[in-house]
Image 1 (cartoon, protein in one colour):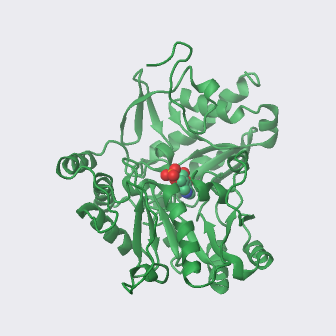
Image 2 (cartoon, helix red, strand yellow):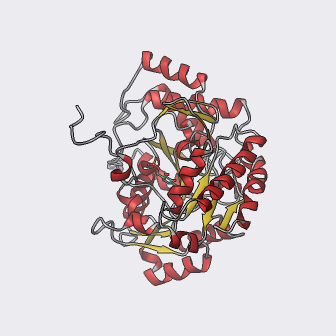
Length: 429
Ligand SMILES: Cc1ncc(COP(=O)(O)O)c(C=O)c1O
């Protein structure tokens, strides 16, 4: 029962609840690149929910697979020696995608889970190897790695990290675009103290920041030179967003020690995450030797059969319709749709060109003149029937891989109209 003094009990993540409570934007239905609100208005989903509905919404194949699994074995844990066929099959299919043969797969409920698993595994790896001082984690400014404990601590978006009191100690951040800065930081901390470096191939929530040429290969080299584990956070980048299965495989010579996956793994339909673990990290846990270590870690829903069935059906859709490569094929059209917006007086920068994602950042002056400018632009786009994602300094787009060329053009046109509306409306109004 909702109390008399409030409209709704639901507390939305990342929301100013004072503003949202009275008038939530209630969605009712979705199909392919379209979603409808409760009033029946249709919107182009230029964000694939939160960068995840890569196969498009409302896939009947996924619904059928989920229903079948719910009827057969709805839920069961995979703790200890328990397993189920969907979890076994999903792990095998993901392992087959890994750049390092023989990789193992730790399943979880999403990206934040995967990052916390990767952080703990990296630390456990060095504890077991007798390098007990190797606990320090380095990440990048603007990076986003979810909202769990380790993910919050290694995050590089200031407001997300502040206000909690002490987080995980032994964490530091480097500029997002400099290989030399990583070297300097490893030397400052002491290479014998650094366990892992966290890297999104393309930074997503932190503003769609593309890596400079040579950056990804460069940091991979540095990590391998210093014996630091490379954690590729491909939660957004994988499953076609960069036009390849894992995202990091856009750089075929790079072989991360740990790869975090989520979102597109199930097209966002049911919560699934995974960490691909290179053999040298996984091996001690699989040795079978007396007293071999046990990873005392894992969420209740790790390997959840129905969630894994959804993921398997999604992978089938990607394969059958050859969707993965579209993330690359469409990066040019998306860039061409967004780039002209850079000429708009309210726009500071447009970032796009690597994968099917992009950002339109408002100028500093526009944001200083109206601190609500990003929210207002997002709402103005919504008024045009276009859903874009509000970031700290601008808006991002990351549509389903099924989007058609003319719909990509509509994204550019919709944001342009949103900017015009923003310009016309009185500041702060
Ligand atoms: C790069 C990256 N890592 C981790 C996460 C956290 O994933 P989840 O929200 O599923 O916990 C996100 C979510 O947006 C992400 O973009």
